[in-house]
Image (tube, rainbow over all chains, first blue to last red; front, side):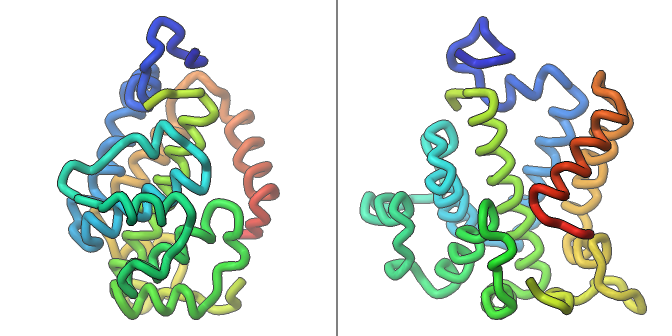
Length: 149
Length: 65
C-alpha cells in the first residue's frame, strides 16, 4: 500500500506530488523541459531511464515506457543486466555515466565525462546529466513511497 | 573526483560554477530554479528541517560544495 495515498493502490508519482499542487506543476515543467530541449535523443533518454530503474531495482519506474521509443527484448534484457556492449558508442558513454550517478558519483572520471561531451556537446552533456538526476530522484521517490507506477 | 570543471561555463567572462554550467540549458535551468524555489519558499516543512536535511544529504553524498 502506498504511504501517502492509501485510498489508491495504483497511485503514481504524479498523484503523490498532487499533495503539493504548485510543486507538482514545477516538477512536471522541469521534467518536460529536458525532452522539449531536444538536446538528447529520446532513445538515449529512454535507455538511460530504464538502466537507472534497473540499478535501483525499481519496478514502478521500469514498467513505464516511452511510446515513441522501440526497444528490442534483447536490449531490455541487456539494460536489466547492465551489459553495455550491444549499444552504440554514444549510448554506451551515456550508460557509463548512468551507472555512476546513483551510488558511485565520486568514481565518475574525467574521461567518462569527456566521452559524453564528445558525443553530445556541452549542452547535451548538461541536459543528459540533468535527466539522469531526475531519473534517480524518480526512482528514489517511488521506492520511498512504495508507489506502483 | 576532478580538480577542474569538466564542463566550461556557458556565461562569457564567468568561471564554471553550478549556475554557469547549467546555463548551457537555459530553459531547463530556469525550471530547475523555479522548482527549487518552490521547495524552499512554500510548503508545511519548516526551513530548519529543510536546511538540516540539505546539509545531511551533502554529508551523505560527500559533497563539499
